Length: 203
Figure 1 (tube, helix red, strand yellow):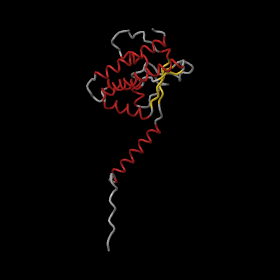
Figure 2 (cartoon, one colour):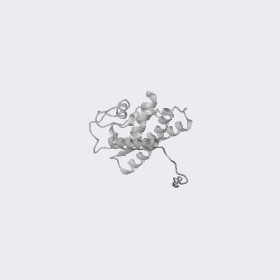
Figure 3 (cartoon, helix red, strand yellow):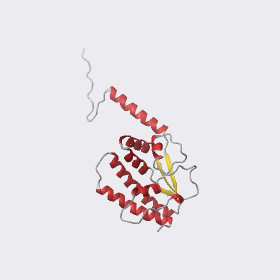
Figure 4 (tube, one colour):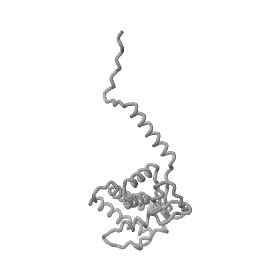
């Protein structure tokens, strides 16, 4: 009696062993569970607490001073996650309540954002890890400001945060310093300083 032969896999199909399928399912389940268990985190910095008085007008940008002046802070000092624990070392304060009715810099990090930064911190030196955490906590927009000013500020803030994150990740991965990354970060910083000084009346 002839036995039917199993049909071949269709062209382009990739067969997986049972163990591989189980591993993929477990990874997907763990990722989904993590996303549900860890909500997004929003950080704030009231504009009244921002000053560039210590940032001198010069051709050299002090990125540590600039980032320290605008880095956003958590609401309450409770630090339950590794990212929040590292954040304590790079922010000047913890806010007692969410700012309301005042111009405020802010950024929201998703669960995936936080997980990526935490993974980067684990593989990096302490100094590089803290620079990555601080870059992730930089603001991307401002709430409570006049719309035109808020729009200009958002573009400058977002550009600088992106440049700072790329620079920080480059260090985390152990890549050599790159001149183009330095120039991009410097240019974004100069534009941001000019924009925020105008908002603060520090021109």
